Every structure is written in C-alpha cells, then in structure tokens.
Length: 109
Image (cartoon, rainbow, N blue to C red):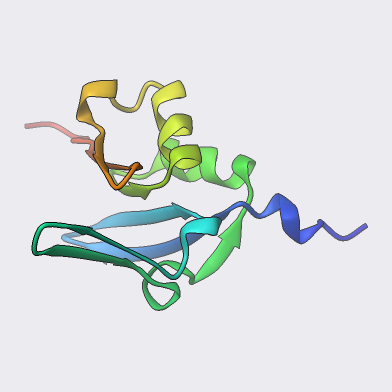
C-alpha cells in the first residue's frame, strides 16, 4: 500500500557540513514563502529545502541522529522541542514563523 503524500508534511535537505551532516527541515506549507525583518529577508525556497518530502516518523529519526539542525516552521520546531533537543527560549520568531538552529557536540573534547 502506498503512503499518502499528505503524510509527508516536511521538506528536507541534507548537507555535509564540516564533517557532520546538517539537516534542514521546514514545514512543507512554508515552501515558497518569503519573510522580512527589516532589511533581513529569508526565502524559504523549494530550491533550498525540497530535496525530499518526509513524514513525522522520518523527521524524528533525523532530528535525533543529526548534529546540526536548521528548522523552520511551527510543526517541526514544536517536534524538536517535544524531543527535548532545545529549549523554548532558543526559538526565534520572524513574522510568526519559528526558527531553530541546534548544534549537538558529540565526541571527546
């Protein structure tokens, strides 16, 4: 049985970054949106975020296993907070859209 596309509620792009995997996830309904804060413009583009569409289960696995997270949107940020990957005060909100970056340091330092 095929998975329904509506289950795929996030857009994902993986990027190798300084020897780690950087995971960029946004709520799929934000694709194509542009937001402004003064002279600071953020383009939530399909070109950047939409390498593939994923569901919540896939998102949870990626969130728990990645060391650098770049998250945009209410659903994905709420999920990261629920998984205790960050605290509420780490979330930035621009034009009512939450943003969260998480860096996890793993290894012996």
